[in-house]
Image 1: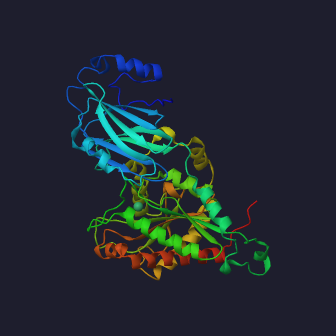
Image 2: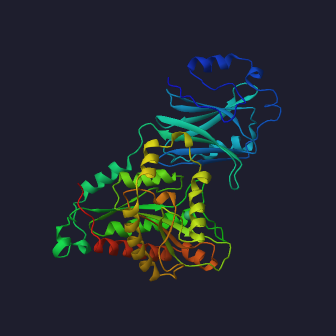
Image 3: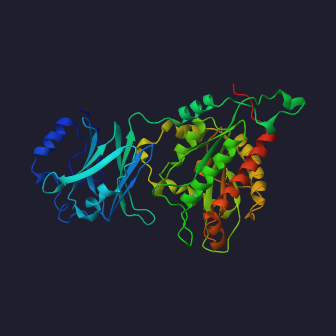
Length: 424
Ligand SMILES: [Zn+2]
């Protein structure tokens, strides 16, 4: 049996370090000794519960008006995760939690609950396989109250990069037909390798992104356009596209960057839809990273809004990758930014064929998702979801295809003029 330790959200309960012996001892203690006086006087209410299933991990969220006191244990034979909530009521959200589990959930088989002690509510997550549970609390942000997050991460995670390489082996490679080197200096360049494009659908899961007047979520249109863009790019010879998410779940911004780097992407294209309080604002725009301030106040404001995805989507700060963080801080990104600006201009020219442009040139700001030091990265605000006319277009599959094709045109034109170098 393996038991993973988790620290509780707040110090209301005496379970800072829990091993097996401690957990057993805890079970034998009278319940009253476990709780700080007053902590249980008012039962914790679960106001809302959500389950976000995905191949990468399944996330369960319990939202409450006050912080919850909790404990998480991972158990095997059979595989299950146990969540103990101190001083929590059953309530309709807990009672209805089992119905929120989908049969197609890759990791979660079901949810049960019961009283462990008169004051401790035990929620049991029955699993389909070996899972590492990561639990953490999020302070209120945007319209969310206190959230307790339980991430069920497969102990042997699926490797999208391996899947990509397998797919490549099945499909013999060929140089891009429009990316053959010209005579002269460019002829020295070796383009006899695939161009890899990382497509990054913005937002997902708890983070809807911007919401249109008709209730359209940015995360849904970003995914639809991204999937279409992948189809269009994959159809061209010598190009392969990989999505940083292919479902409705949250991916931290640093993880998106990490995925693009692991796939050795030649370009990252993050797909979004813009919003502004003024409903007449419209048009497409493209952004690159800036190292020293934004090119406009609007660009700075937008970058802050997009960077808030981690707070809203819910990132576990305890497991932030220190190696990645250092890489992103240390390197000068001048070359990356220059390439990004070039690619961005081609994509902007592509978009101009199907939509008005919000800004005529590529703008720059400190977008966290564009910070891969070695992957040129652009962020596309396809259209304004806050504009009723553009919201309608963003929802329309035919129009989504037109956006995707115009972005693909720009990307391919960029690579035809700037063929990628052979890898060392
Ligand atoms: Zn966005």
